[in-house]
Length: 279
Image (cartoon, rainbow, N blue to C red; front, side, top):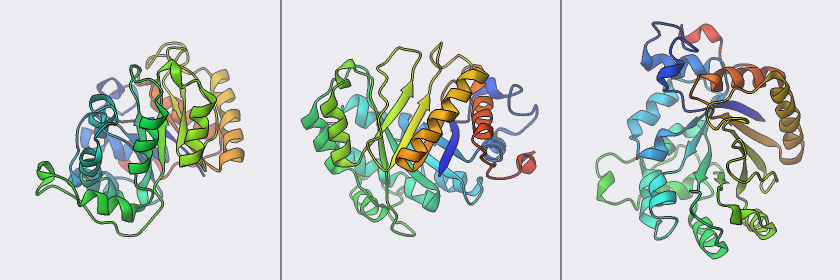
């Protein structure tokens, strides 16, 4: 299974450059979901979302669509992975389980200022639920901030995957990859125009790729040649890992959706629904 999409979809520069002029903002996800088969939810990184939002996103996308969900920066950037049992419960209670079968991997992005600390990582990994039933039990332990706005059930018990994106140079260490493999955490292969370390290994039963821009972070377009290279690499990852998730984050000039559609075409992926579905 190969999933290709974008990191987020609510970007004003996309309006007129990607979204048709006059398309209601509330239908932008529906439009994008007619052209790609996955999206990375990144609003969940900035704040706790509401179950009603996750339900709406589920309803606006085809049955075979998949969402990756970005874990909260309160956990990764503010708490820096320490004393995060309750924040994790709050995150899972905020609504990801409402996605049901459309819930894909959870992405955890560490700040560039957080160095490699194997003990800290191992303790964090031990807290992460590996199936939706465990996630529901964790969500039920949320605090009062989620009172009256929580989702603590799952419609079925499904495996739950986690991926880690790192940015400190100290992670360029073979023991880090061994630690990921021991805990079945997917390494994020992140193309960041050379700003952050580039690591490319398969550490779980899936691969996760984030394409932030190869020449300018968040801004540069991927050329046809670059997309050809990434198509080849994704095929290699699929052969090695099985499932692959690829998300374009070069959103500033609306290159991300066009690049995602072009890469999906090179990989022979069909849209999750007809492109006209959201017109």
